[in-house]
Length: 257
Ligand code: DGL
Image (spheres, protein in one colour):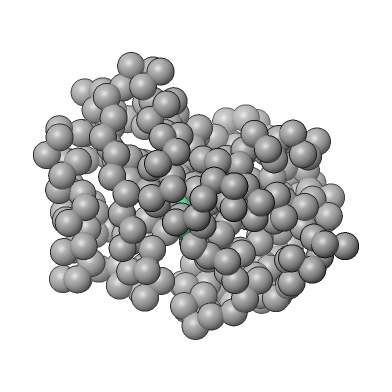
């Protein structure tokens, strides 16, 4: 039994890490579309096209479930992917919403994410349907900050405050980190806003899969594919998942065949 996970790049390894912890015996294939990251400032059509290509690649391994680790792709491409493949497709938005609903006491929830995720209102639609008041904020500097490895200290704190002070002032008691990269800033966010409950979508999806009572028996193999190499990828990959080797692939050529 195997799991496919895809993301626009490296950040989805936060999801890979949590899912691998939850299902140690599963064979896991991860694809990071590092050549085309970021998805977070692209149009809906482009995000869907890229997501379809990534899904085609991973389903070629005969995976049993496809996890869309990228919040931007989860916000735009889930319906298309579900029509395209005949295995369960799980995104990060729904699990994040469920976790936020369990955590919030005052019914005021903040959501931070890429420009595209916030523009899609994917979290907003689901939360408002459940009677939650929602305060959204795109945080475009967080992804480059994390990729530069600046996740704590003066600069990280300044940038975090620049975006999050506003939603905290709106009276939220829970904050959804609606982007693969943001869990890496979690310690800084917690330090600055200790009273706020944090929803980390990588943990939310692992918990969601656990509650679905899925069992994956396999050899516990892990393969990581990327579409381009970069220094920031190498650094972050080692921080997140250690020395699992990385294989470079040409996604667009494979998809043209
Ligand atoms: N993976 C993206 C997300 O979770 C963040 C990086 C990007 O913009 O592609 O929305």
